[in-house]
Image (spheres, rainbow, N blue to C red):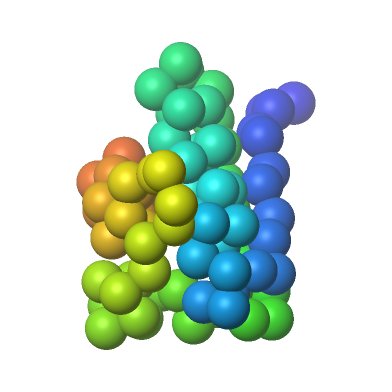
Length: 80
C-alpha cells in the first residue's frame, strides 16, 4: 500500500503566514524523500491563482510563490 503524507489547509490570504505553512511542510517532506500531497479547501483555493500567490508573504518564511514553484517543479500533487 502506498503511503503519502497529506497536508490540508483552509487558510487563505487573510493570514499569509498560516497560508504558506502547508507548502513549506510539503517542501521539507519532499526534500527528505517523503511522498506528499496538499489538499486545499475553502479560502486556501485562491492561493493557486498566480496573481494571488505572488502577493502572499508570511512573516519569517519565503514567499508563497517560491514554495508553490517548488511544489510544481517537484510534482507535488495539489488537490482542490
